[in-house]
Image 1 (tube, helix red, strand yellow):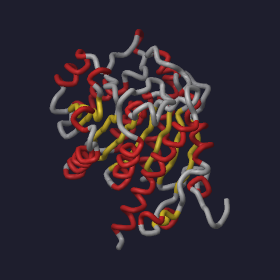
Image 2 (tube, helix red, strand yellow):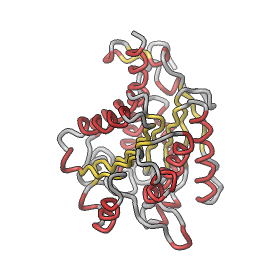
Image 3 (cartoon, rainbow, N blue to C red):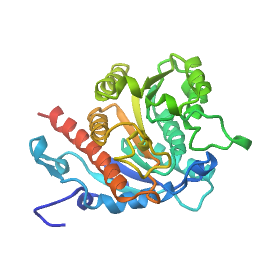
Image 4 (cartoon, rainbow, N blue to C red):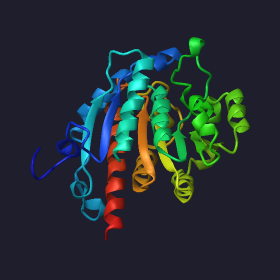
Length: 312
């Protein structure tokens, strides 16, 4: 660290004391079970290495916004890497549940997208009603595998079938930036059958301006006084900007749009939880990893700005 160029990595402490707490989920067994390309288990540690030099702590572009004045950021470490996937999901839910109870905002970096159900389950434990936004080219509502095994394609079917979720008519699950070429009609019809709890916002309808409809969803959640979980599968980002994922997208959100979405997520005080899934440094590390850390930075920047604006 130099005093004239303090970066985000310079101010992160290694414990659970932060207002925003980073948690790593170093597992890609769920990707393997879904016949995807493995390697996402290396995502959290690669993310941390690239995070060290990401993002200025004082951002002149936002009227000299100094993150340190408004937020403490900490790294709560990884979920134990030597567990079965089912045990890892249980430990993850317990960790996220504990952090939410303490008023922290967990930010979880995977790892496969199967992490999103235990994350959502922890939020259900602590909320009267929730909005879950899955930013993803895919729907991830596939049935469980044989012997009721979860996988990277199943987390949101697990959520929708969770009695705590489906019994509360105020809950909402929104698929955002889904691509019709990637989504089975059987899975689409499954979601249609669950309306009004579920909704699909197709990529083609928002590709020129995803932020306006995303803001509208966040605003609805705020008006309904729901706690919001933003789940960001980075395979929704175009592969020219984000190639290091289990299933790269030929078309998709731009890097700028992804950062804007993260910034606006941070700005909403109703957003209590965010995760990033499918960063696979075995396929491509530096370009994708720098984008993933920039998404994290923009979430933090958005929350710091919201706090500053609230006390002016």
